[in-house]
Length: 149
Image (cartoon, rainbow, N blue to C red; front, side, top):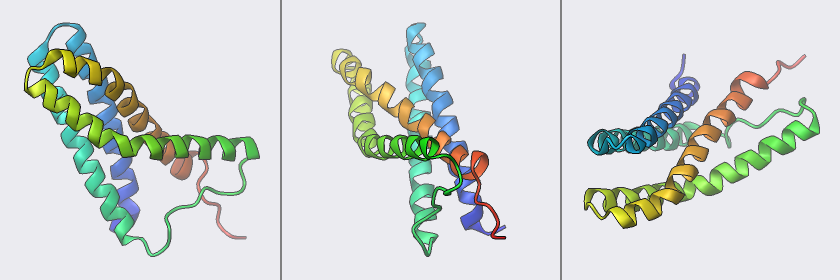
């Protein structure tokens, strides 16, 4: 199997792992396990960084503009997909900046600033990770391209 065919599955797996790490990190901090939270969130950032590298590499390999959403699902499904995709892309552009600012304040032990920005970063990052998996599922599992007849 060519690399260009494998990378979407790798990217979805990395997004899924980031989602899991975000949730575990959230639970850990609610339990007061600050050190475990720190290392879990740094791992999540590492996984997300690897995802971004793989995602950009995948798109550099494409000779076209990527995998289009098929025409056969009902229009409400297509509109829902495109609305999700649009919100995913817009918010995904903010995640690296939000994450870096949040991590910076956490590592500097500036807890008030860390908490303040994390209240925005966490739900946005979680939404982007979950919708990344949903975009993959829509394109490759739920509504795969149909063979030409």
